[in-house]
Image 1: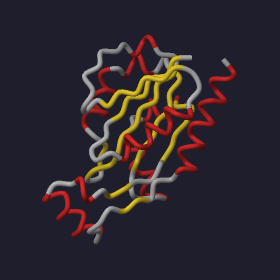
Image 2: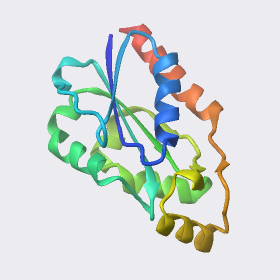
Image 3: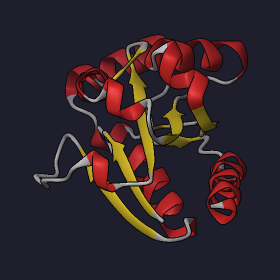
Length: 164
């Protein structure tokens, strides 16, 4: 089983989550950061596609939205997993998840994950630090990354892969 993980990581939190998912996944895995990696790949070559990103100013990265729009029809023929790294939990996180991924894609997704998030102030630019301080009152690196949510997500996908 070949799995493609397509993601964007702005400060490294989503990348951490992807590294864990990649380590725990069964089969061959290619992880591609749409923001940094200059890798050519064809989504049609993969059995399972995982798409993930993080929330910044209430929205997922534009490169993720663009990727989904560009490959929409092909994605609807794949086994999908969707995940989001975001600071909030509960209803707010669910609303952000729903806003991040189109309904058609969410409906066919086999596994959905909300992995928590981090404020990596040490990796932010001046403006980002000021916004995070004003909006959230955070002035130093802070994490609520949820390892249990990541593991549950991977276990659900691996169980699906085992059935194939």
